Image 1 (tube, rainbow, N blue to C red):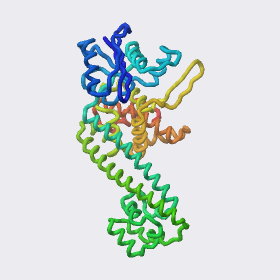
Image 2: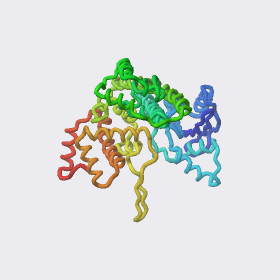
Image 3: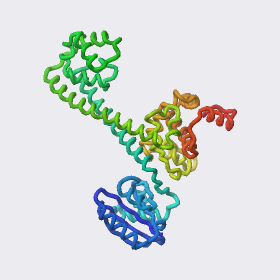
Image 4: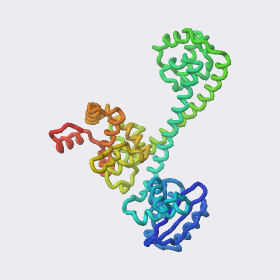
Length: 406
């Protein structure tokens, strides 16, 4: 067997190959290009003819290099960068760091402790596409939130009237109103007929608020200097242009994700979860994936999602802390789902209430609830069965008939 450590970089990769005895077989650098990959394949083929005898170690689980290795059929391990950094000090106590050294450390960690790590188990192309789209959608939503906060801050500086005129400042009609009337004087100068005409043209439906809205337009406003109005209205138009593009793209992403989710054979499992809805169902499926070999047990899922705490103990001393090392998108998805399940699942609401009575804060109670949910979802995912609230409550009662849910 041979162990290949690759220190990944943007433009090149340092490669170190060692045999079972820890002896160096090859060490070289390749470019991050197809030509560089051909050099890697050539070195590997010169050393071993059987792919089952080659094991790769990197500090990442994504990227073009990882995809190329998996497509070739090699076994690839993604080692935690912090673990690699701490192991490096056992080789160079002086603190020396080179790319070749990092590649050698990766290879030797895999040679010595391969049984402690899990290889990357690739999902189907459909699940991988869902993962990319849902992760990118989360980034777009964060961009929208940032732009919305900028808009609110801008309006507070010169146009506070607009903040409470419509129910949602990021609604289509609110943004159209701000574009049509970017300065307070233009809005306050509207006649009742003109304001009503604008609302009709843009499909406004909450006519029971019309009088309230028009009265707000006519209320006295705090005086703002003209130069402030001119400069801030220009900035506001720029932000709105970004917001409108983001809102339109987010809708397209949601439609594409929904279409792909319906095509996936596991969609029934995740859509059955109470409170998952159209957004969290696909998100949870994307985070779990569809390769059943990816997780050995529910504990590994809980650790990856960040719901399992970290325990440090020595003698009589014991400390339990929040888990930082995890997949952040997975943690965010299960946290959101735990919150949404409160109004849809009887046992989830009861468990949350018990956590609150024990003195837990809202976030800690939801995290603990998510920890429970992951155990259930893992069993559903592993067995391919949808969620059944009544069945779950029945099993819960049979296994602990004299205790409450906690």
